Structures are given as C-alpha cells and as structure tokens.
Image (cartoon, rainbow, N blue to C red; front, side):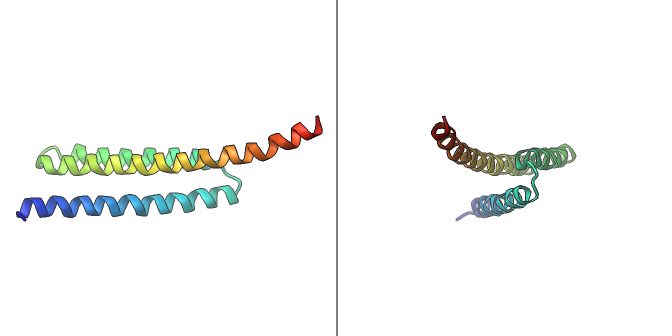
Amino acid sequence: MKIDERALLQERVRTLVLRHALEAVLDRLASVAREAGKDAETEFLSLEQSLVSAARGLADRATAQKLAVLVAVEDAGTTIRAAFDNAHDRLEVLRPAHLTLVAPTAAVAA
C-alpha cells in the first residue's frame, strides 16, 4: 500500500470513528435535553451550526494549504451533518410513538 493510500485510509477511519462518537454524544445530549424539559431539536440546530461554522472557518484559514486540508475539512463537515441528520431522524422516530399513545386514548374517549 502506498503512503498516500495509507494516509487516506487512516483519515477515513478517523472520520468514521468521529461520526460514531459524535452520534453517541448527540444521543446523550438528546436524552439530557428531554430530561431537562428542553427541546433537543433546538439544541441540535444550535450545536450543528456552531460546529459547521467552525469547520468552515478552518477551511477559510487553510486556503494557502494543500487541497488535502480542504478535503479533510469538507469530510468533517459532511460527517457532522450526517451525525446530526441521524440524531434528527431518531428524534422524529420518538415523536410518532408519543403521538400514537395519545391518539387511541382520544378515540376511546369519543
């Protein structure tokens, strides 16, 4: 394996590990937000905007660097967005379950 290929593979593995770690943190954040009575969706949007903005800031500072740096920053941004998308999807799955529990009770009362 060439050195460039190995470096690229290592970077992809780090990105994958970052994504799984970020998803675990987001799951925990959602749980804590729900326990505190906060809207997890709002917390996620704020955090996502901060992280993506920071990644873009790195890209702006790296314009004099090699293309590889810009690609790595774009990968990080994509990873962050994918993790947040998964977290948003999990929140959406939880909402219908709550609504389903409410609907039969209303139907029985009618």
